[in-house]
Length: 321
Image (cartoon, rainbow, N blue to C red; front, top):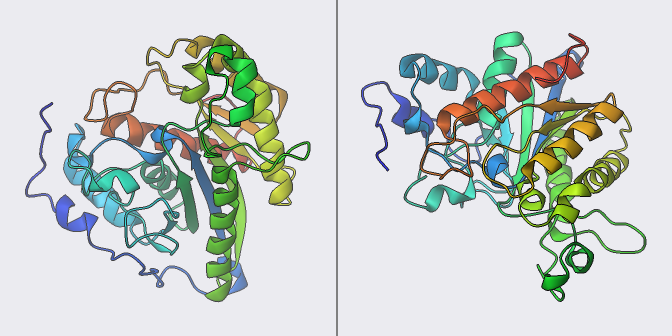
């Protein structure tokens, strides 16, 4: 597939403008009045981002300006980040996801974090935020043992614990759930070490394609599975009212997508602290194939998450987005 390249606009140099491990300090002081809001982003491949910034079809000069405007936002890409960027705070920019080493995405892939930051910076130019990201493609919430009930034909399936299942009924948490909490705690400890005061403002969750594509039973149970995940995260972060911004499963031909999307909507309808972020209309025509949002779609998705976060802070009462 042809990638439309951007030239002469400074975007290539901007992507590398903030070296990995460099915590941008000018915008983040230590005075209590400068407390920053931390957002957590997690999920599967559309949280990671399978696209390239060069695919963007809008005003590229304006995008370059916007990227420069968010480069001082603190970003923790997680242990599954590009080599050299893991387990440390750095400046926000595209090209930090683990898949960036693959030729199609090298130096320019990004998830919802970019559009999210652009939107919040637009809504509150003086606001200070930080983003903790931990995501991995092709992953679900259900643990391997549950697949015996969901899909009898897969009896004995073993994902070796690489799932988002929270601990429950004496069963241990999946590796991704454990890794998520580990990264959150490490990231927050890093802020404490820099004497940067913070509050956790919300949790961005972009996941569900896994369950939507496997079986009608699993898709039908997605609401229960997701609600259990949300309860566990809130408990572990000691915040029963933590806003969850839930990205709608996209409109790709997932076998049971409509059913899983209905369960997502129900989870948001039943809990005033959950917010559904619509995505079915967003484009998916980039290098990441039709299962993934292209650069235009991902930027817009992130902006919708930003609007949801703004709403969750009590600015408006309308939903969904």
